[in-house]
Image 1 (cartoon, rainbow, N blue to C red):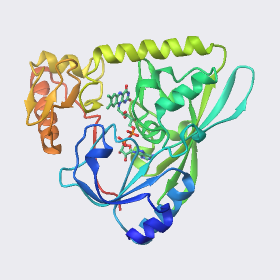
Image 2 (cartoon, rainbow, N blue to C red):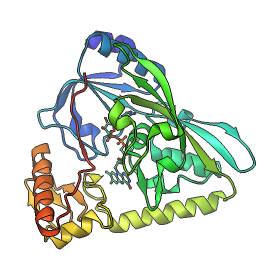
Image 3 (tube, rainbow, N blue to C red):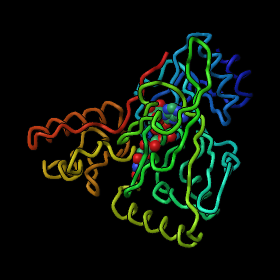
Length: 311
Ligand SMILES: Cc1cc2nc3c(=O)[nH]c(=O)nc-3n(C[C@H](O)[C@H](O)[C@H](O)COP(=O)(O)OP(=O)(O)OC[C@H]3O[C@@H](n4cnc5c(N)ncnc54)[C@H](O)[C@@H]3O)c2cc1C
């Protein structure tokens, strides 16, 4: 398997016994049998051909910023989309007087895309400049903040699916992407997002766009416990309320099991105070859900994903 993956992805791209805590923002997770870094759609297709032919378990990640891997690690291959190409992963595909369509590779950073848009005086992605995920992970999650979400500008996305035992490329356009709150068609169809097309608007200057990004990032630094490892908001926002408010009202500010703790700065975040395990995070999530439900009747739904193998 290792040799086949090296042939498919290129030498130096495959790591044996890769410690997954290094690849997640929560800094949690034991070793994967192997981790393959892919930075273009063609390599991804070759890697997937090997995994599907071998019927080998795999799991796809971007920046690991919404993810918890098990403490025992992952028995199989973690396929990591990353931006070897940097901003070369971005291209202005078409434009008119009012807008432009930008293509971004699935492994590129959302924050880098946001900066690229700013450089090109295109607005619509200011909200994404502080989201530490990839374009592909962002599309799957329909990532959003401060009133914006990717569904507002992603007009189509490209994918590779497992098909009937071999990788198949496809495109989902508009409503077929089935965006919902922190949801998309990709959460159900299991396909890998290889890239997306964003319609962004002209009319604002670089300075105006950059100043909006700075303002939103300052709000983040002010409200969020960015000094600790985490996976962002642990829970989805319940209808008509905020997870953080309900958790604080239940007296769970600072609630801790092992190394995992409900942040004292923002109760919607679970942070790693040092040495947190996946079991600690699960235990905090379960305890929070139980207590909040008992106190308010609201059952919080986790936003964080716990990695499971795909075959
Ligand atoms: C400090 C902090 C702040 C955050 N703030 C926000 C915020 O404001 N708004 C927000 O929405 N989120 C926020 N997040 C959460 C996270 O950044 C987003 O959910 C992001 O979109 C996840 O992208 P990722 O590349 O890290 O995905 P990962 O964590 O790597 O993966 C998440 C899920 O997506 C799947 N996946 C990843 N890449 C692909 C792909 N190319 N194709 C198919 N499936 C894929 C994985 O299998 C997994 O199920 C924050 C996280 C942190 C740590």
